[in-house]
Amino acid sequence: MPKKGSITRISSAELGHRKSLTDWRRVRSLTDTEIRHAVKSDPDQSMADANFWKTARLVVPVPKERVGLRLDRDVMAYFRGQGRGYQTRINAVLRAYMEAHPDR
Image (tube, rainbow, N blue to C red; front, side, top):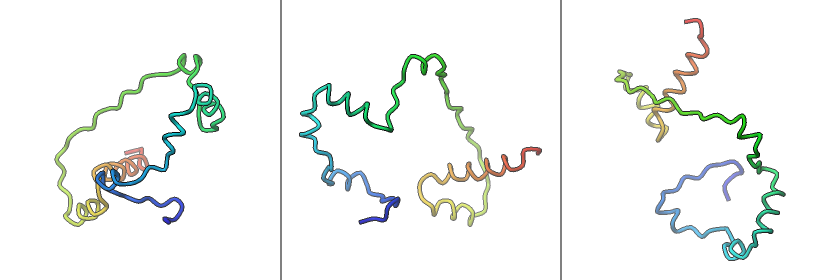
């Protein structure tokens, strides 16, 4: 059993062979009333009411700029060695530096 909070990575092929822990027969047998009751009793749920939509605003992500950047081989090896998303991590490090030095 993995430690609490640990993350296990598996491929999509491995995922297809895992047995679901959900009792789908029970889920399919639920009535609409039972589903509504379950949603209302869930402490993590929050329904978007009319007031939510009055103040909601659309946030469109700003596209990132493609750049050519020359970095030392060991720096690239370090970030690539951490797996997928290494460019996002490099961006996060640069952003942290930028935010730590706002006067420049």
